[in-house]
Length: 206
Picture 1 (cartoon, rainbow, N blue to C red):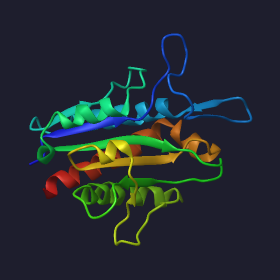
Picture 2: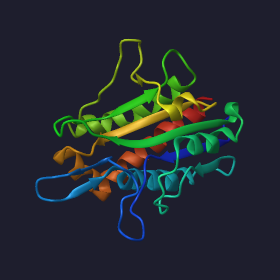
Picture 3: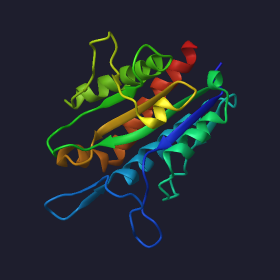
Picture 4: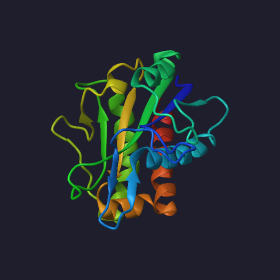
């Protein structure tokens, strides 16, 4: 039975001196505005945590870093936070946003390669997000060649965690249209709620 839900907000934030604590993972648009992935991840992740706290007291909600903490903590530290709990009682969700060529858009969700216990968690989150993204005509960047929607990659935080683990790429922060959504509080609230619903549905199925 799952008891521990570990949220990981990818990359760093803006420190007290106004400096971004991550090298890269940002994009400056022609109008001079800069998108910082870590800041966006914290905004979505913090909202998701507030929704998860609505679950009953049987669940322990943990974050690898607080949304108000700007530090860009190491990948090994993030994994250690998750692995301090029994793998059979824990799930891990890493919140990210993508960047490529300023033209790509849409949603991706990753697990490690092969059939794993993470697949059901990824599928539940994707299924919850899908109707909302379709309503907004946003692309769902799935890999269905193996019968499910998640993409597979050997990301460190997925490969080294002992529990079911997924990495969510909500949108592309270097795309002007996607970034406009990521700045919209209503979009942030809705995508966070959809992720919450996906996690809750997964928990109910266990």
